[in-house]
Image 1: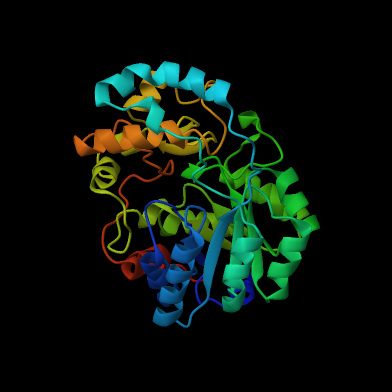
Image 2: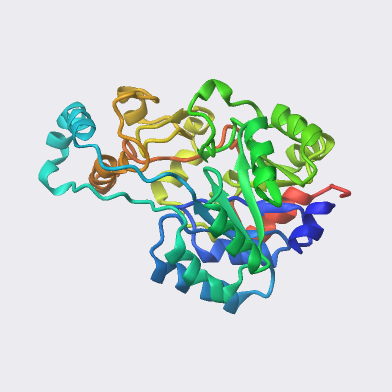
Length: 347
């Protein structure tokens, strides 16, 4: 398979970077199991990021992936947030949250020169991006380290654009995928399609490897992805219950309940569409709410609500990120899950 050769891995499985539910431990375990472990860096400051990379380097000599966001930073919109806070006022009262303490700082920052300076000494084997790619200068710098560059495409147009900009591997993120949509050329959710159609379209037009992502939870799903022509697969939700994941107890309970069968795209937690298990906030506010502030500022209001609710044992305001095909995901070590995913496959 081209993807194993391109990434220097044994198995054509990439562990999806999942901010908030994992750290270096999961990346290390998957890499040591023969796949490509990924470290989500979008919510880490430079010091924490370097510490996590050092932990990976000390625990494995296998390739690993560092993942970053590439969103455009826009100014804080005071009027937008005021309207949103008016809508959330009843929840603030219920949980005793003082709006004056909320601030105006973004929780996620895009890949920039400071981050590049920090990771340059490591020359990471693989660097992946979400929401497009960084500037031409930054991309040239990353490729200059010898790093393989991957990025997510949610449409054929995005995949073509990524290849034209110099991306080495395209991740075909189908509408079934859990977590944030990687869409960047359009904000129209009507452009989003299933992984099967997306992989088929990308394979018809791209000359670089295409990795299927979204709704891939077992060996049968992987076999189907290969039959469609995918060069590899990216798997996220299948690892949410594994020993090395940092998935919260509330999130784990939801994943093992019947609620896991009801997922939807929502923008209320971060400001960008992302797939998760439907909970109270999504039901009462609407999964897609035009009043929600833009990414990543929406988290300013939702984070304290989440913290307050979780103290009471409630997942009402917790983003329960999860793919559309996560029923019956397994517990156990990451190694055992990788082995299960590859079981019976001849490739």
